[in-house]
Structures are given as structure tokens and as C-alpha cells.
Length: 304
Image (cartoon, rainbow, N blue to C red; front, side):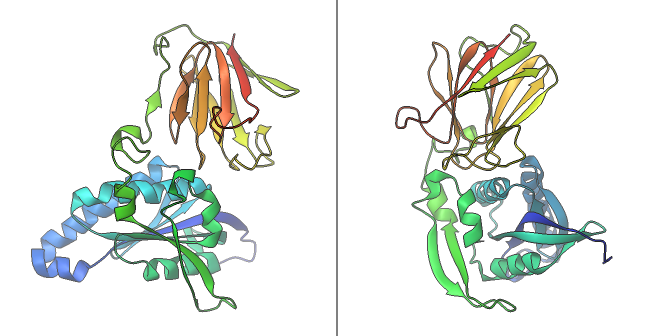
């Protein structure tokens, strides 16, 4: 690596197909190899669909990197929700921190620690460092379990970890945020067909702050100092949501841990969790808190 290499903050995910030796013995070399390759390809698709990058494949696993911790967590969750259809078992390890990139590969203590966490993960388990806990969606608070701290080579202090069993995710059942029908869909409010009136501008108001999003514009919303609309609230994620102008429509996309509540004027409340919705007319946007259960200040919007 060059001396000029700079470190960048990344969330690292390792996913491994487990018990591959048994698979080779049971299916034979060629069939097992093809099954594992197909599984890793599908896991990689989950990574890219959540905004991550597959850094490389390593034997029976993949190393992946994400700019946003929430995206890494949701990738792990979607892997767990889908992989059972392949009749294979995987384990997932997650950690975050500074990394160095060189020729597309990643290096550093963060990568090494994430690899060690993945090695410690049991079959059908997500194991994540305590630093990743802030990125867990609220509905997972009851199923993420602390495990005894473990010694990791090169670390002065034992590593605090959280474990999530795939079986616990499955028990959330139909209609949960992990249901196939509820992950990554684009929602359209009642009376707001995709071919409706084109919006030229979107006016947004939060407290005393007002801004106008023009056609072709983009806006990020969250606690991060670089957000286009920064909102410092405990229930708001660093990278909570974004609004893009696409094909004549302003589209709100939730990218958070706790979700976003959209209340179009004269319509029912919509809970977005890693989902998109078209903003039409006027209404309210609540970040991270159900408006029926909190007094969180909303963002007011109106297309003009």
C-alpha cells in the first residue's frame, strides 16, 4: 500500500456458507461447487441492492463493504430472510471502523476484526460488534442478544458482541418488515398513480427551516453533519432518508433503522421501512417515530 492511502469509515460484512465439507460429501464436488457459487451470487445481489460493494469472494464466502451501517445491517437481514430457500446455511459477521483501500481491496484492523467475528458466528446466525448495534432497526431490539465478550487477537479489551438467530427473524412472521412483500417495495399513496401530474418543485419545511427542491434535485435527511437537511434527534438515523426527483415525481426513500412515517393529506399513515413512496400533493413526514405515539416534529411537504 502507498503512504498516501487514506482511511475511510466503512461497515464490513463477511458472509460464509457453512458446513461446506458436508455439502461436498453429500452432493459431490461439481454440484456442491455450483450450489455454493449460485448462493454467493445471490448474496452479492443483496449487497448491491442495498448500496454495498462486494469486495471479493474468498472460498465459500464474500467480503463486502458499506458506507452506511444501516445498509449493512439490512443486507444481513435480507440474506437471512432469503437464504433458506437455497437449502444452505450461512453465517454473517459485521463490524465497522476505518479501512484502507488499495486496488479495490480493503485492509486494516476493522477488516481483520470483522473476519474474526464471522469466524465466531454460528450457522444461521448474524454476529455483530457492539458498534453496529446503533444501526439495528427498532423491531429487532427484542431478538438481538448480547453474548459473552470474546478475546480477539490484537485487541486490548474483549469484544462486545450481539447475536441474532435466523430462526428468530423467521418467527416475526407474515406482515413483518422481513416479509417478502414488505422489503424494498415502492409505495404509492391512494389516489396517486405513477402517471399522475408531474411535480416541478417540492417545498419542505421543518421548524423555521424552509427549502425548495427543484426538478432533478436530491436531498439527504438525517443526523449526519453533511445532510442536506440535518435533524438532530435521538430517533433519527445519521443517514435517515433521501428525496430524489425521478421521472417527474419526487420520491421519498427511507434508509434508516427505525423507519419513516408518511402522512399524505387526507390519507392514511404509511410506515416506510427501507421502502420508497411518491410524494404527491402535501402532507407530513415523521422520522423514526410513529406520530400516533410521539410528539416528534414533522417535515411538511408540498409539491408545486
